Image (tube, rainbow, N blue to C red; front, side, top):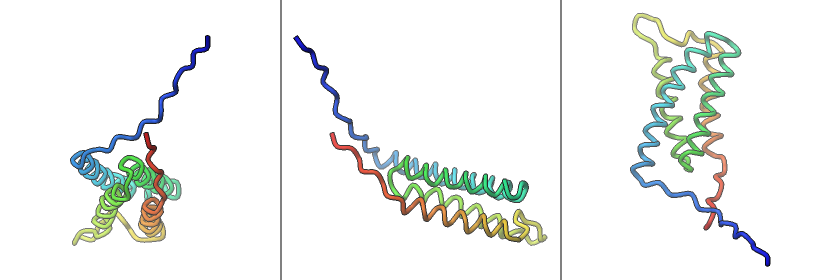
Length: 131
């Protein structure tokens, strides 16, 4: 007598409620601002390793936002927080001091981060498994 174990079919990923999704977008927005602020400080302090570390952290956050939410809005939320933080830190103060001193590293951080956000937003999403 042969016993065969039935293999369970792959369960579909549960679709989160809109409230949970909106909360995730808010968390990604705040995380984007934190990563942008940390990246702005690190990229100039340890050039060029700090620049690579800051861009790696930003790309990880953007791709993580895509995978966590399953939508491009997750990437846009993280990138929006990152961009707001970077722009506000680049403006400076009336006294003349600011986080960004000007130069190639700062431009690479700004444009590189924006390019990474666009790349992550245009990545194809994996199809959801069917039950």
